Image (cartoon, rainbow, N blue to C red):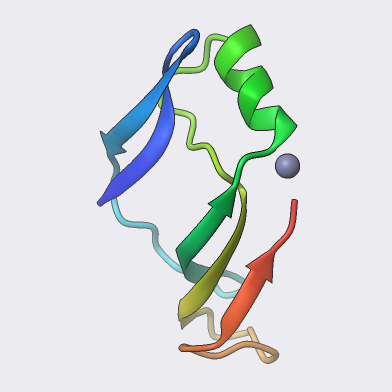
Length: 82
Ligand SMILES: [Zn+2]
């Protein structure tokens, strides 16, 4: 799968990533919209963290939930705040 990440200082782009696995308290969300955050721009401009995924604030659709998750289910539309 693809992830939008820091490539090198000052540069971002798409990289190949392994698909995430869902732990007991996790939910896997398919993002439908992602908002840039000031921490994303700080990572790109000020740090040297290649392959760090950007865009942690988003809207999306739940794909999978862990066995202990009770308040969300697949196909729920969710907001993922910072
Ligand atoms: Zn943020």
